[in-house]
Image (tube, rainbow, N blue to C red; front, top):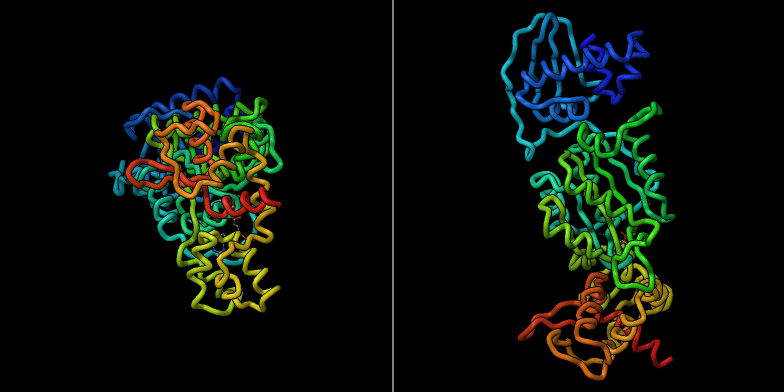
Length: 435
Ligand SMILES: Nc1ncnc2c1ncn2[C@@H]1O[C@H](COP(=O)(O)OP(=O)(O)O)[C@@H](O)[C@H]1O
Ligand SMILES: [Mg+2]
């Protein structure tokens, strides 16, 4: 009886289901279950219950034999999944916890259950070593629960996440990718995740956070910007989707062993606050590829290698923009990159359409400030007042903060903190203004 309860709970079955499948009453299963948790709590020196038994066994067991009553629980392998758990009615002695694993040093798993079906397929994925090292360290060493990856559209957030997954997948039991385009209601998204994590259609299913406790899950929600109001300052949730923030907060502040990665064009103030209060919440701003962007130009078979540094510099190593510009160079100049870099004027071509999408999300006041920034020759000191802007000091700071959260302005330190508009955005606005 204890054996089938434990086996079934490890398979995420609830007591109703166990009773039904084994021909017992629900009350009987519940009583036996309570005895089992008490017994295991003693063996593992932890408060074990139905919701946390998987995670505690997984973290503490290693390859160990524990005896109880007339039966023994042998946990072979390091991964506690139904096919790896071996529960025998043999008379083994209580073993020592041979390989006590600290939470920061998990033993790599076998291949996890993955759903990346809706993730884009990427043929090339260069560089990003330091970003990958940072993300791995957060996930493995720091046990980060909520990670926000933010940066301009096309800068390579999704590509980075997919590369990290390919390197870190054995740390997790479940990995699922979902884009928030089209934007699902939270309740529907949770249902989708639950069905994936439960590996069954049994109902009622436990809550997401229960799965996050019992298994090591990696959930990726891409394109979070769809949750935020267009025409407002960055990162303000749409009224009908405010519940997402409560979910993110729950993931960040509850105790569990899983990780939720969010990717977005803009960072929300709520997440920023959470990050300051909660050590398990992290965020990473994604910028260009740097020298690794040369591999993109090489793969596109561009000529004039001596001009590539300048090309990468002009387009900020931004892979999306470099892909667009490379296509233009091939189309117009037979691959001669120097034709573009020899001219002082910054050519934008099809990049304009991409920028338009991002700029149309700005509030009216942000647009006003962005146009003003586009005609400044130098970075703007944040402490000064700019009378010609006709915006109060407080409002001005708020707008600059929002533009910074959208990665449209960059902070530069001269003598004091100052901001300047992204040079590609600046070129676009200067161009569109004089059309
Ligand atoms: N590290 C990289 N190496 C090569 N191409 C990349 C890299 N990162 C992104 N790209 C390419 O740039 C484009 C935009 O990347 P993507 O990850 O979709 O950006 P984001 O998710 O930030 O909008 C894609 O075509 C992708 O293949
Ligand atoms: Mg993306």
